[in-house]
Length: 366
Image (cartoon, rainbow, N blue to C red; front, side):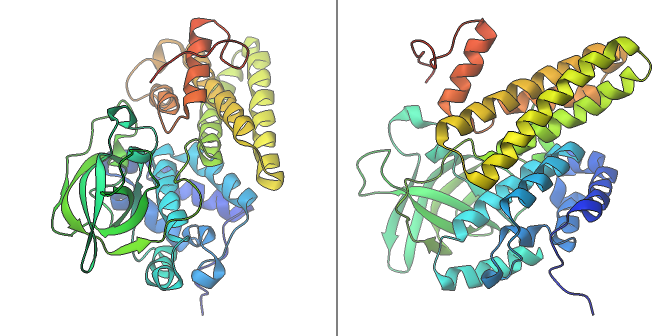
């Protein structure tokens, strides 16, 4: 009798899964991992359960195992990896909830019987300059009602539930501590815009969602911390995975041209160093400043490696459909995805050839 969920995939089982994910990557990039079957493969291999505690129906993989997994999946299909991080972010928020809420949602999510995503950009990097919350919550007899907009939601037209955050109407400041909620996507008052036609990762089915007096399915009791933070270690893991995908193309080119071998070797050393620092952080922890510096290093490397692989591929790589043509577009994603301001500022300073605020005056990019 099969045990479900199975153990979190590592080693040969992870390699086998990555081959399966890669075999449908074209379909995933077109339809999304929900319709392509990629998410079903993650569930059947025990991947989803690894993010969830044993008491809540999961297998509770270690942070190092999770980061290793994300690097591998990102090198196989970045669209799948992105969708998985949004699923994991939603699960992390649900895991802060009451025992009743966890029991209602987490076992089904671990088994892949339900799907979820997160919509919290309105609380972090998106639309903060407006000076007022764009998604608000109003207390009603049977719970809460949400009104406003979630600007960026991965898989908005493909999942069962949405985890989001809204500022209560009685809060006068946009930076007030938000409340977090679970919504059923088939609830009355939810309007999902058509998926955005992005530079890359269109298969992520990223859309904006309008909410007009939408009743919540559950409330997740606010925690003592101040809401979600941008720039976690998972974003760095995905950048490393994408780097390794571009590096593989560069290595193939170096088999035919010895002049490329020292280039390939130096990039391999750099990505290995960043990866080692990532795994050290999962073991011993990392403060916000060092975490952002690590993210910056990974972001810079993923764009440089894709450009190196394009240069090595010559004109063939500039033709639509060549693997590096896609990878170089995907590398641009890391310049805009969930970047803390310090990371964005440092990248802009690098592009301009000036020192960042770490060594000099800060620049205002808001």
